[in-house]
Image 1: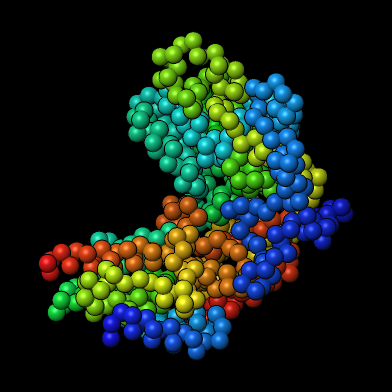
Image 2 (image 1 turned 90 degrees about the horizontal axis):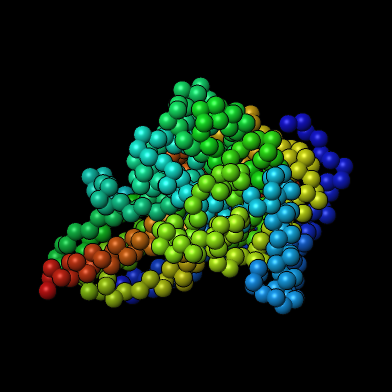
Length: 411
Length: 140
């Protein structure tokens, strides 16, 4: 991507939107580089949360009173914001969930009634555990087989292999848009197109992608796309599932249970309409509304500006970190987002993370819930610095000095 | 020395350090220098899996006291293990069962026993106590 910071991208102004960025940790100014795990929340979103509980907290979709009406309107308005953001054809194709993990489980559960022995599910080698386990469970239940698209040393999927794995037995392909552990951007356009050629559905996990890019689900022609609000400057505990209308109609309800519907047939109509068929119980109303506010906030800055600025940070941090002797970066695809997974030779990532924390620097250490990737590289884990649009080059410098200090202390 | 006396001794030692850097440098040095476990005991059976670092623990009963040996793949974890071994090894099972680990707070290493650290240390302490219970049953 071309390095071209937009004129209206004002980093000082943006940082002021995030109250948490001015706090101290262990006596040092916080340098928050764990955005891949969760992003920070701007005042514009915090205000919406406070406003909800201060002014119109009520249960939705059922009350005739004013508060309930206001809350319902705001919640459905958020659904429309999400629809517009992802360019879904219909608002009812957006299912509000507790997050990416629930979204994936919802689809996996649904496919439980559609798969039989001999069917195949393809997943990528770059997956988060939450993306592997539901499919393993689904395969155990249905007798279907789980097949893995391998990756190469750069942390990229081997697309030639993918083409060979596809067959008429392939019923579902599951892949993340961007790898959480390495930052690799997967060629999902090609993956979707090839899967559709054999009649398979595709579910894309956008948890790591949505803070950085604005996916167009219709242009992608993707069958299912999932995301979490908390990685997009929104609150935790809320996310979404986009599904093509035809697919969502085909899948059985998730909570409440398909079995229950068979026994209590006159209840079936309460589940029948999208999106409510998949939204049993009182949802995270405030979270959903705040998710909408977070999307507004990100669009206010603009994804082109965000991507350009983060790319600058990535290039700068990569260059500076590689100047440290014995530092190795995992995930070296040309096509990656602002995530740097690295290790210092002969030093355990946990030790480095501990020292960095003492210096006020928040990074992730460990296997990032992606043990198969760590097994590929034969390492126990990595140190992962993941940058957001509110990080700065000065913070990169603090990280680099911190890593140098950790290296000095630990060798 | 009994467990409490050793803990007090460690608290006194740590009181001499001025800041976190000195404390951690001491722990790192402990982790680097001590041979903690016989290689033959570094088996999967003795492995406590943390999300972040691995810990191996082995226990033997000698003269009615438990002798612990342990190791970790992370050096700071190893440093803390060295301290825990110093406190709990060569002690009677009953004393180990009844001992607390509050001294970890006093020496400024409390954060390492937080479950979110997932470094295997919490499980390790649990495991030390389990060994103590098991050996105490044998002695009864």
